[in-house]
Length: 133
Image (cartoon, rainbow, N blue to C red; front, side, top):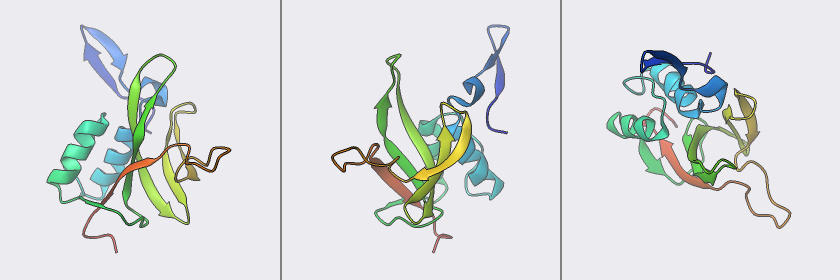
């Protein structure tokens, strides 16, 4: 459901989600739109976050199931830098799109820990909405 989104660019069909490689914002924003918590689905983290803030989402420090997590930027081998979104599930778990598999997966909310005990990917921001208790 969240792997492909085709647009017409320069008279050519293009999959802007790259077979699920770039689907985190589309996944999160589509779920939020289904529950009428934002105005529309988006394909970028920036537009998703902007819509969330306009729709009443606010930063918090509390990890509560249903909150949206924004992870720190990550540099990929091709040089691209990406931010990443997902949902807090509670009990140290989150669900977000896995760029390698192209599907949403449940994982540790910091993608696990390094050998030194540090998070593999730090949470940069947590967003909550008034409906989340």
